Image (cartoon, rainbow, N blue to C red; front, side, top):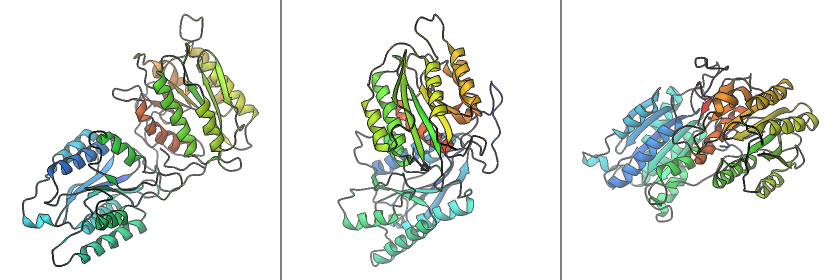
Length: 461
């Protein structure tokens, strides 16, 4: 079993067909959450606080990708619906709408903070305009100072109303993430309200975090860093998914990958294992190998049966690289493991992380054909192959066209994650984790459609 929220664009067949259709049910076409962004704009909040919160909202919108279902409200004396839950083929347009939200107060009653109305408005928007909760978790990200307020004669009633609406949202299974205007340790009353509103996912394997400070470490932390933390708390589905699978993790250690990025990729695999349910009888089992001109078997399939021992194996893998990329030999070695050492009835999977085409020692030209042939044999034996196409800083970005789209299992959009895109770096591997987790949750590749939009270049991070 994998927790669906551990850490995804999609093409049905190869080569170069028009974008594939999405399956029903469910009609998945984005990071599968319905999300409501709520921003307090009471008069006492400073302009830099509001602008930093807006920047985080814009970053969330852009990072969720095309076709994200997003609503945005501001609130003071009441909740103002600035953008109904909507889907757009242009995530930049949604971001522009958020940038144009008016954050200036104009009347004295804008000094109020009716937080309960914001929570209620978001809930109604998610429930009545949102998609099927079974496939699309409901999420609220609210930016608040933690002081619900209506008038100076009654401080308690607004706070009770906020707690009541928070409890209703929790009962509805709505994930709520709180961004705080202020110091979590500075005000006792504010801290109480923040913690009452904050409701991270209850799924096993999900990060259980506290409210985050909007203005904390402004110089050190970008909006992108904060959004990374927010999205890592959001599950990819509403319910835990069961999976019984044997997986070979295969990592390219050729010298086109900087050592720093090799370390990030190994840590990505380590986190992937840590967030999984590793169990001999009902969960995942792993084997681990790396390769360049040689294949290094660090852990045979099922040799280490607990996540702690597997993580220790990854910690011991040398953080160094060497010439050549003999991916065909790595696939053959992995296939042998999955044929000789599987559990009866387990789904068999190879996950390859590589930054380019296969190239063997002594060869004058790439040996993509040998790698494609090795993958064909593995797939003929019922093994599913996933490819994480890593960024290539030498800008040799022909891996997808010449090799990966033939190596990955069908449909290619579900199995090939192409990170060779402008601005995408190794720091974005967590997005690949979301994609992989969603696909691995399925009993097979035929059971459901992919979550992200279909595209001719595989899944795009």
